[in-house]
Length: 423
Image (cartoon, rainbow, N blue to C red; front, side):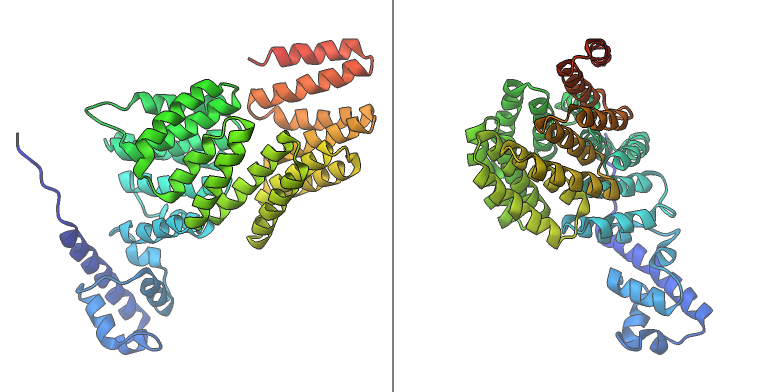
């Protein structure tokens, strides 16, 4: 069988350098500038000459500077030639945790990227949106990426797109579809076309998270034990995610959560650190240790306030509401839950908005104000009707119990029937 050799990266880089150089020269002539004038203030005439002759490639910083000087954009200088160089810049920003900048960079490339390259750009954008907490948007983007990369026969890259599609569904509170996609991907792991250890570990961890929230801890534990066996050589951040996910019971959650916190710090994953702090706070609420819960929630709040991340702060406020509720302070619980709802609406965090409304309703219920609790649960139910059925079923069930306590048996029956119909 004849082997088809891929062109070397060095050859591809030379071709790309020549394409960019030609565009730089054309743009400079159109602007009526000399090489010295274009370079002035930062670079040398010799550097611009080397670029125009395709002897070297510009960095993204240089490309941006030159584009401004020439009255154009980096995308224009790269258009109709190759988006890989610009995509690399966005991928580096993604790896560095600069989610918004990475997402913006990928978005800028969509006008020029075609075919499989567009699919690769969409995968990066899907991940960026997911990292920003915009799972519903990531779903649409990853879906298109999956189709494009699949048509191009790029199996491994299409699997990456499907992973972010599933992750987007999970974040958008659609666990059934996330589970289906994660399970489907794991089933695609064959000897002929293996997933590879990195993606398999990520899939095992993600599916375990879905199963844990679905009340299937034994199944989740089996997946995580497999992931732990594969993941011995993974980097600190991935090992941190694995150890955090292994926390399936209250005591183990505290132990593994604290260990994963240390690993995330070593990887300088600030957002993940703050998220772990918030989840540890919720674990300590379950253990009845409210002092520790407050300590961890305060640590999470400090990080997210420093990052000015209102999306995450909505979840932190809701956690604080739960802590107050556990302490029997209905006033503080209602105040923190209201703050969570306000932040959630402002930042588009629908998941936190629904959770905040639930905590708000429970605070009213604790005060004996069943009528107001029912109103809030009604708002939460209306909001949840456009989302996944399990969340709506939870709200309707609690609302039914509340109405039954108030003596309205007929209305309680209606709500129960509606909840049971959500299969």
